[in-house]
Image (cartoon, rainbow, N blue to C red; front, side, top):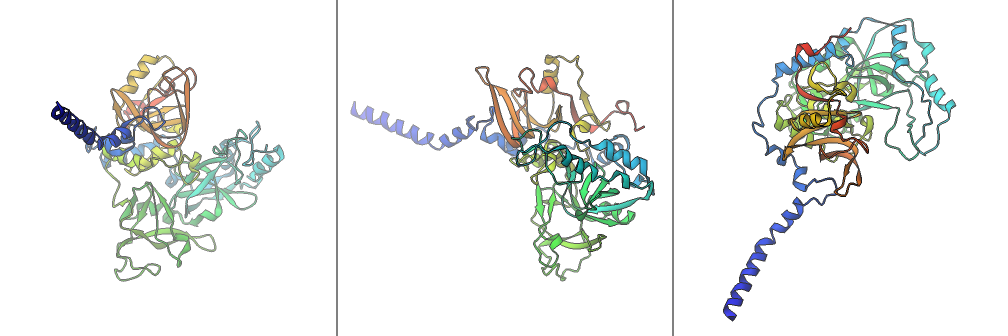
Length: 476
């Protein structure tokens, strides 16, 4: 009897010993992260890539992507073909651009200290646009961004918010542009510190100190220089240098294309450093008189970059998206980050695909294949279509976009740059989770408001492939 009890005890101990290594795994797999049903393993690109079939099959080849980009520039009203800019800008057109772009807030807005901004201060900001200073006719000037720069609704650094307890959503912040971005200079502010500019994807105010003025051909030709590197990390930085401070530890975001100086002598230092462990790249700088010049800088060979755009595959879409996981949400590219539409645009840009800046334009662009929802589409139909979405599809609801990364038990999951989510608990109460980061969540449980789910408010689902010719209408 004692022998049998000892044997049972030994077996129990062995069972417990075998279970111990599994306990941490079980803990990792439990929904203990406090966000919907998300588990630790689902926060890795590998989890979703492993579920794919034909993960490396091309969705579009380089020619198809090039054709789609050309169509986007040709047919999407939110895009600007700078090469087609006339030699002179007409004053009335410039005035319309500026006046129609942003209006002075009529309701109360608050500054960063939570104090109401009085109307006189707002009017002074608007007056700094110097509309009376717009010339009737002006020669078109071109420039290039030399450092990541904010694009603003008005020529001011004043941050304004709709409530006195919100200091994240600055209503004067529009977007950001990265080093090497070409632009057309349309007007100067009254304090001579800002330019109203037209970039390929947006028009807004930018600080003059972050732009260098150049000739049309050198500005527009920079994007076509070869060979080049594509930044494929969330962001990388150039090597530190005291000799060229403007190019020292310069931030380069995902999708930025930088020319490589392939003929740089192998034994010639760059800013005091031997280049053999780095790529010698060419970047724009602003000279003392504000004019454009180019200078060499070093990009480490072990930095996350590629000799060309990555192939457009499901594997790469997921891999690139997860490089941003956990990055702080930044409305209009604030906080050195990005928002929901900036996030998906940068992911796709690393594979050569161009997109409009904002969700309102992305979700209806004539260049993309898409399913646009109508009021007549009921909840069941919307749910069916959402469940049929595939990896890489973009789901648009009012003011937000999500990237589909796969499905579990037939329900789609998404990665998105979001301020937060809401969903119903098992008892029917509403859970509201402030995320403020690039996050992974299921789609189907998400609530848009008390009475509507995300799927019930879907405006469109974009499939990243060329749109049928019958789906589009050209620019007027």
